[in-house]
Length: 212
Image (cartoon, rainbow, N blue to C red; front, side, top):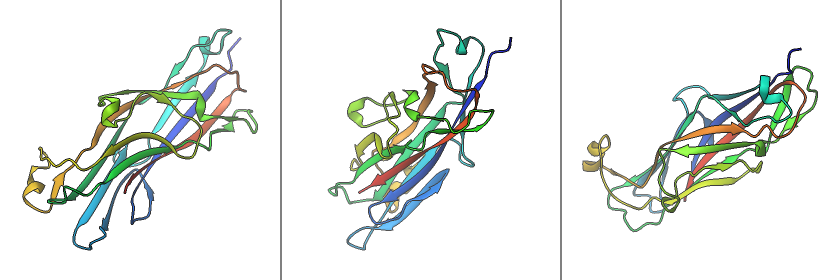
């Protein structure tokens, strides 16, 4: 007898904002505002997954994964996350805290397959972080979505001045590269510890980066 199938889809979108700017949803965002003195420009870049489109992580819960003792299901594909603040050369004393939060409050709602109005909370999805820095650096660490609208998953101070390729050409102009979160990879897992009705479920997680 065929086992029921639960297909769970997680979609990620990005938004970036500075203290004086508005957030804009998009797969990859660059927002530029003028600082308080009106003399310099700050930039904040956030990219989640591919440079175009919205990436979808898929979990297929079928076969032995819906048995009496189901196992955690790994999602595909992995998602890379970049947070790159840029600031004017010479502004080395201005504190610019950067924060990366996720909004997973919507859950994953039934779309088809007879699951009705069932919603799977995002607290059933966790991730393992790789290609990341230590927790003390403020980089993304392994964790689990809380289902909240503003879960902080990374935080760091963007006030360290240095230059490195491929940004070296900016160092002789208006901007230095600052402390950044560069291509941290997130691999997602569905807990599969509750039996939900068979069907296809989809939900969206919004990543938002802010720089004060």
